[in-house]
Image (cartoon, rainbow over all chains, first blue to last red; front, side):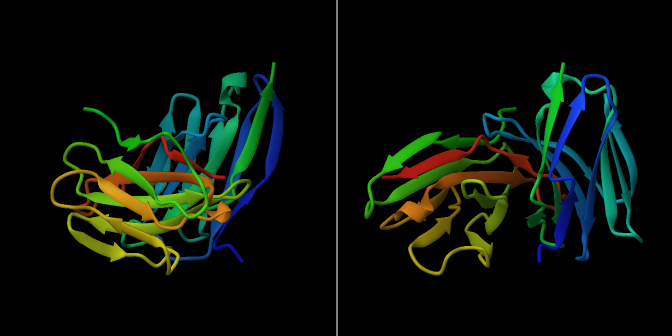
Length: 108
Length: 114
């Protein structure tokens, strides 16, 4: 059983819709990362958070340490947001353990 | 400040050959992580290195795989006697360390074993 679980596996939204991706983890962590992987394969780090909430443009990430749960929200989604979104838990060494990813498709 | 660089971006090897993948971390970063993404699978940790030291290699296959991060030059992931199952995307990420868990990913090397 993966110690980092993401849901949903796949998500299709219409342009403009609000999107939420959830991540639960069962290990002790130092931080939680949200990553974006585009069809070309490159990985971009969107957020690293250990508490509370962070916002960057239309993206918002939250984490609840007590419940071992994090969410990534995309407001006013756009076709260019289509990508795989991956959450990853960091142990005390900084090593990442990854969720399986959520494939997001935003249609015009 | 250049980002993390990996080369080559694409590498084709025949079964039994050696593959060498290079990772140059961001300037000032002394910590490197290697991750592997098999086709249709998620990312998995392989090895964590600091300059001249392997800190954690718990994700590395026991045979044929090795990694180094010398005092000078890039980190190298070496795969000897490659097999078809080694075909994957290999990503490295660098971190400044010093209690920072920020990681910056390179573009990856896509290894194809024929």
